[in-house]
Image (cartoon, rainbow, N blue to C red; front, side, top):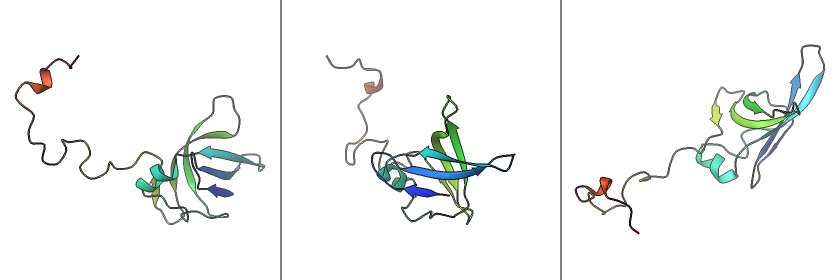
Length: 112
């Protein structure tokens, strides 16, 4: 790992990749915002230059050495997903105290 830039609107991980012929190239991998990554369990101090990491990447189609970071396996074995993380507590359901929707509400036409 060359450099970890914990920043908004997007964080960046720069890694040095060894090629089959023995040469190396640096790749820039774009991740999400610090808030999104923090919700998924990331921390600014998770990586430092020189750390050995294994990454999952969606490379750019042009062949440039950049891509979208999907996940990182750290040297200690932890795997960090670059997804949005878990929803906040209570997300996905009705607001607290809202009670059950009235019968047929799921099939009702939208208001005009």
